[in-house]
Length: 153
Image 1: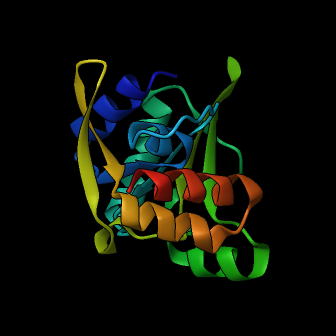
Image 2 (image 1 turned 30 degrees about the vertical axis):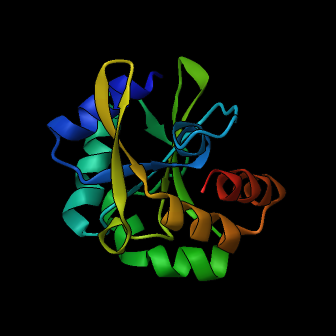
């Protein structure tokens, strides 16, 4: 899935979003390859419902048999008891096309930055918030991303 296609669908659905993960790292200027698209949204029930509708319109299906309302209402339990930090969608026709909605970060409390990508304006998480998010994750790739991002500052 092209980032432009996804971001255009999010804009049309009026969903406040910011890309995070590998694409955000790369758009901040660090060399980084990635396959999936990771994003955060404002954590309100209406946006969870809208994101589910937008994903379905793009032909993507949830990896879990849950609804947007269930994810929204039980997200703290999913995070604490199931170690789930993202709600994943995939394309059944092209299973390598994956979009992860990070449920452990609320865009409402984070800064987003507008960037131009392939002739389109898209939003990515601001560098300081991206670094903080990646430090908290502690995964080896995230630690490497932090090092790359800090060199850019």
